[in-house]
Length: 170
Image (cartoon, rainbow, N blue to C red; front, side, top):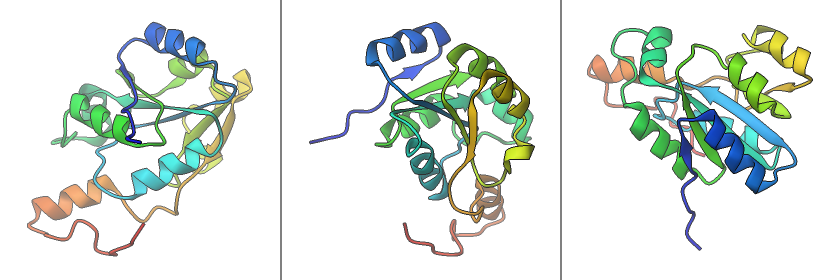
């Protein structure tokens, strides 16, 4: 059976309507800029999905990605990044959002878990206070940070041909 891509939303109201119809018991929210250029993103999203029934990926739009990552980012526009993420079997829905952090999404969606990658510790997650106030569990998932899109982009721009110098299989 072929995997059907997850729906992509630009409206929190439409996402909430979809979630209500789905009847999920445990929602996990993962968020980021996601220039999906390496296996670390797959490991992070698999780890996030392990905590719940429905994985919602909140994707920074192009303007907020540029503000967070700097000149020349994102490498791929949000419309395409969202389609790549929606194609991953562990992703149930994608929400493209404009803010620099996900506090508003956490307040509106109130997922059971907020998953962040290993470039964070629980104490360094920017939205930790919001999550604690709402009773949302913050979890750190994925492999220890050995991949970074920014490093891949830099190597490519500097003429490097190996986007994954460690050659780590999945």
